[in-house]
Length: 114
Image (tube, rainbow, N blue to C red):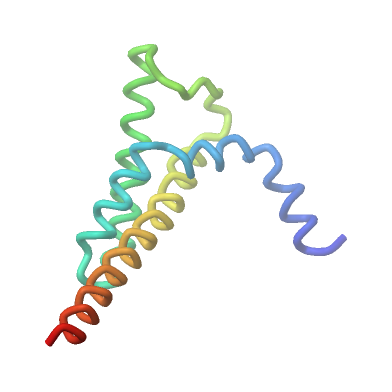
């Protein structure tokens, strides 16, 4: 069995959890915002950690209040936080790249006008 098939088979039980982490609105918002504000690439590790943990905390608080979209069981333990941290890192990288592209385009437009 090739490695990619073994990896896919191993992650099958986590598919809904991975998708939920990637599309969690709190993880997206915090990750993009902190990535946008980061002025060094190394700060994205902390931005991803903050976005993932904040998304996990908000999700569990909403679950306690019975107003959550998260209805899965807790049989996966820390995988909730792990996948949200990884998703937060991904969203913060996207925010960082978008901010750098905006600055680069603004510099080009200023230099072409002058």
